[in-house]
Amino acid sequence: MATMDDIARHLGVSKGTVSKALSGAKDISEGTRKAVLEAAVELGYTRVTRANKKAKICIFIENMAYEKPDDFGRDLVVGFRKMAEPAGYTVDLVPLTNAIQKEMHYDEYMMKHDYKGGFVLGITFTDPWIKEFKTCRTPTVLFDISVHCNPNVVHVGVDNDEAMDIAIQKLKYLGHKTIGYLSGGLGSYVFQERYLSFFRNLRKNGLNDNRSLAGHAYLTADCIDQHLPRLIKQGCTAIVCSHDLLAHAVMIHCAEMGIKIPEELSIIGIDDLPLCRYTNPPLTSLRQDRTELGKSAYYALSCQINQIHINSLLLHTELIMRDSVGTAKE
Image (cartoon, rainbow, N blue to C red; front, side, top):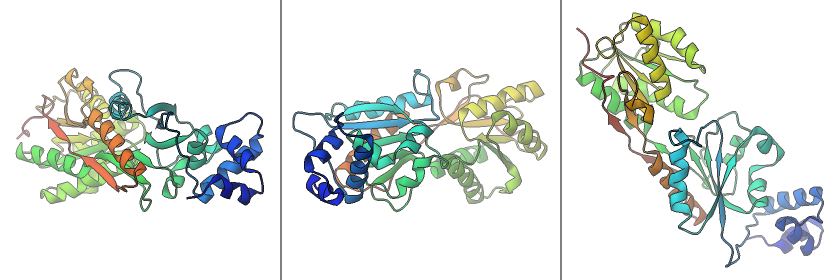
């Protein structure tokens, strides 16, 4: 393991300068501080937390609501903190922006703020840090996005392939032979996974897997306007949606079109948000236990910090049957 002496020799500065730069002393220039952080990352330096000081980890969050009790991210954050704080960690919540990612490399940011590891929520393939997760040295957990070949990074989520199999098996049992799929934009890792899983499980269950049975768009209104009428025209008697908010919007649009749910069309969402109980009719959904996912993320991060390198940690889903699903019309 590299030491402050190694960093000092590498940069040709004193050990005191390195110490001040790493501790955030105000009498060190920003240029020197940046050079020290970059060298520390390059040489593999790891800070040792003092015995009387709590170690820090952080949750980065973007593109995900988390402040209200019904928000998707709320239970993920709560579950993580329920495990991390009793274990002695201070947990910082950091709203992640492009500006933060462009200002500093990921490992440098983590070292500057003395974070032992991070749990990242809502990041996408277009984020500047996504490439850095392929080579970063900081223990990191990514929710619903996977980066291969870096032992320091682990993916936590649900088994989307199993979830789609559960949904399609149920619809097949109820007599549905032509099943459609509507999705948000496929720039999201998890939406890509669900899209591909849908077709894999149509084939697995001996059902029509023509690619025309699916549609996707970044905007909900575009997805519905462009693809819902087409799926109905193709004879779909059931539609699986990539998330509950899209499924709810589909149900509203069907009501406006005079299509009865579930008598004429069955709808399944994914996530089991609290709103599912209050839609008209109540929405059938594949439940992700978000509190358990948050707890699992801490478990995975703890393993990484202790050099137990997990590739991925996937939880099971549960199909919560409500009134938006029924037998196929004759």
